Image (tube, rainbow, N blue to C red; front, side, top):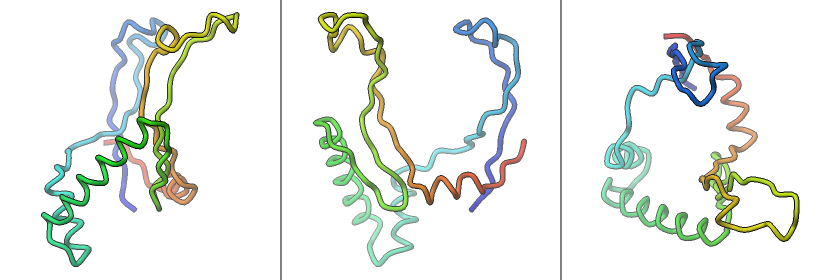
Length: 128
């Protein structure tokens, strides 16, 4: 396990007036790993070439996208379960339920495994 670094930010949004000007910690993401770099690193842990790993990753991502969009959940060992979720509004009457009018946002969720959750809870967190 590594160490997660937090950075201090000030809330400046108008979406929540009670929070405006208040300070909070946020995880500091200091770089983005490219697909090529991820595949190179994965190839070092396997007997495959980076190009083979990249091809496999591309195929897996394509299948995940197709399957979650038709309603499947995808269990990824040692990580969690991917699924599409909808943030929706409520209405008082059953007859008023409508797909497009009540959906605020669709998102891809990852529900982490209990083992990964335990690792996250045991990870060292420090202010930067």
